[in-house]
Amino acid sequence: MQFSIHHNLILMIILFQNVELEWVGNEYKQEAELQREREAETKSNSIFVEFSSSTRQHFASPGNRKRDSILVFPLLMDPIKILLIFLCFLVQSSHGNASAVKSTIRSPTSFDPTRVTQISWSPRAFLHRGFLTDKECDHLIVLAKDKLEKSMVADNDSGKSVESEVRTSSGMFLKKAQDEIVAGVEAKIAAWTFLPIENGEAMQILHYEHGQKYEPHFDYFHDKANLELGGHRVATVLMYLSDVAEGGETVFPNSEMKDKQPKGENWSDCAKEGYAVKPRKGDALLFFSLHPDATTDPSSLHGSCPVIEGEKWSATKWIHVRSFDTAPARSANGECTDENPNCTAWALKGECERNPLYMIGSEDDVGYCRKSCKACSSSS
Image (cartoon, rainbow, N blue to C red; front, top):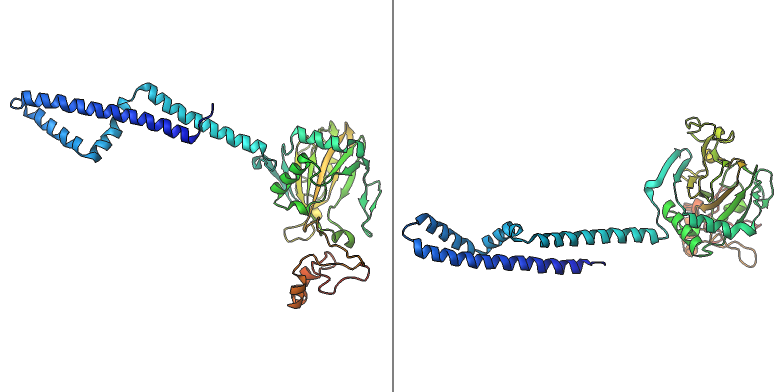
């Protein structure tokens, strides 16, 4: 049975009115008794007359009457009424807390910041315990299980995906917001990282079997082709979808904390080469590949250690500095286009010269208004 605040207020008003009626009744009863006593003992008891007079004055003053009514009503209340009022507050309080908990559980974007640990400042890395539920982990694995292909890497020169012994896992990409659970995970990532959903690539599901690994690498790009697709990857969220019996750690060889992390025999030799995170089902690792000033961070070098026993499932969300969904489009004749509808007006006002990094870009990044600034390369 649930009580609203409105219901509780009505019940309390009734109870307090009952208390007030009892007090008024007692007041009249006491006044009548005092009057009879005054008539009988007026000459013999001046002290009592004085008391009666002060009592009448007291009752005649609404302010004093109200004050004394408040002061004495606990003495006049039935213990059952006190218990009922207490229960009203208790039920309302518990109902409110239950509603808050229920709201938290139902929200697909909710996460518990108290479960986040900062594990390194160089690189900036954070571990969220229990970021995903078992249901979310299992669902992502089911979506990927029969669609896995050999994992590829981006060629440093051309930017094309190629096979390499550097990466021996298998994987596949889900569609953005493929279903309610996937959309919920993506929204939760955006809420945690404070980075827009549209800046993220589609989620990649990875599977590592015995001996499979991913050698240390950077998530930011070295080729111009990939930089045009939303710019550098600024952050990575790596979610562990399964426990691993042995091995499979994520290792940061250049981390400032690599020599400060105690490791016992339950860590692989690979993990001992840097700061490492053990894969645990539901946990998520967030790290940044760029410094706050948007320059690349060499300490973000990371890899996936070989699986020694068992298997490893993970999900990766790469997040770019700009929208990945609206990456620089190409017109039908092959010319590049502007990324902002205001580019033409900005160019006419001289922004191409005043703000070239944003408008045109640099060797490391692509600008937003290359067409209006007449900066498109001949190959585009």
